[in-house]
Length: 419
Image (cartoon, rainbow, N blue to C red; front, side):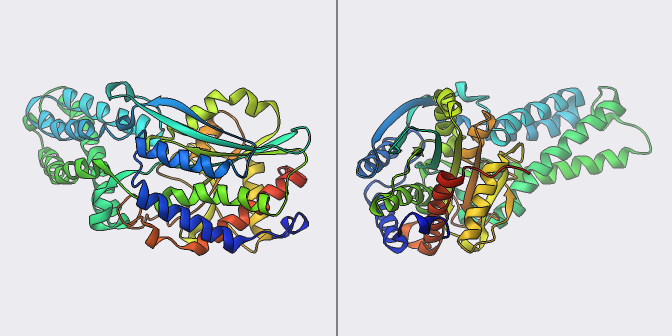
C-alpha cells in the first residue's frame, strides 16, 4: 500500500479475521441464499446492521425477478436438440433446423448475454439490494461503488460429481458441440435433400449423412446429462462465492472508519446485490434505478467477486461472455492500486458468464471487476464445497489491501486517463 499509507494505518489482519468470522456465522446461521429467497434477505439485513456502524446511510431496495429464467431453458434446449436428430432423419430437415435454431435462442440470450428473454415463463420472486453510503466531509464531487453479491447459486451437480474442469470438458462442451453438429447436419440435409428426410438421400454421399446421423446420436447422452447440470432446489453455502466479495467491500469501509479516514469529496457506496446468480438481476435493477445519479458526477464501479484463489487474482477487462469491455480508467485504477500493493495483476476476460460489473458497463457507467478465482473452474465453484472451511483468508487479505488502496487512490487522483 502506497497511497493509503498517506491516509492512515489500516488493520488488514483484523478485518480479515472479521470477514472470516462473519462469513462463517452467516453460512452456519442463515445457510444457502438462493436468489430471491428469505435467506438472501436475512443475510443482507445482517450486513445492513454491520454497515450502520461504518456508514452514514443504509437501505434495502426490493426488485422483482424470475430466478429460474436464467437456467430454466436447459430442458427445452436439450429437447429441441435431441428431437431434431430424429426429425432430420425420418421426417424433414426443415423442421429439424427450426428446432435447432429455437434451441440456440434462449442459450444465446439468457445464458451468454444475460437478457431477460424467457423470464416471463417462470414464477416471480422478490429480491433485494443492500446499499450503504459513506458520505464525505464536504461536497460530493465523485463516487466509488463497491459491489459484491450476497446470494448463492443453485448447486451445479456435475461440478460437484466430476470437478469443474472435468464437467466442462466431458459434459458441457460436448453438449454444446453436439447441438452445433446437429444444427449443421440439419442445414446440410436441408440443402441437399431439398426438404426431404435425410434417410431418403440416394447418392454417393449417403454414407456421409449416415455418419452425421450416428455422430448426432452419440452426442445425445451428453445433451441429456446437461439437464442434470444444476439442481433446481438446493443452493450452496457460497462462502467464497460471494460472501468473500461482500465482506471485502464491508471490511474495506470498516478499515477506513477504524483508521479515522473520511474522504473530503469522495462518496463511498457499498452494494450487496441480490440475485447475481440469476443473471446479474440485482446489479441490473440497481444500475437502472440509479442510472441518473450515477452519471451526474464521476463514478467508478468495482465489482468484487470470489476471493479465494490468490494465484488467479485478476482484473476483468471483458465480461458477459466477452461481449462487453470494461472502462479503461477503472481497470487501470485497479491495476495501479494492485501494483502499489505488490501485485502484478493481469487483465482477463470472462468468456462464459458475467460479473455484476457488466450490468453497469452496459449502461455506460464506468466499471470493472476484481476477483481471485481459478477460471477452470474449481470443484468448489457453485457446489456444497464452497464452505467457510474451504476459504483462504490470505486471498481476502489481498483483496482488502487492494480495495483500500483503490479507494484512497481514487479519492486522491480519480481514475487514470489515456495519454
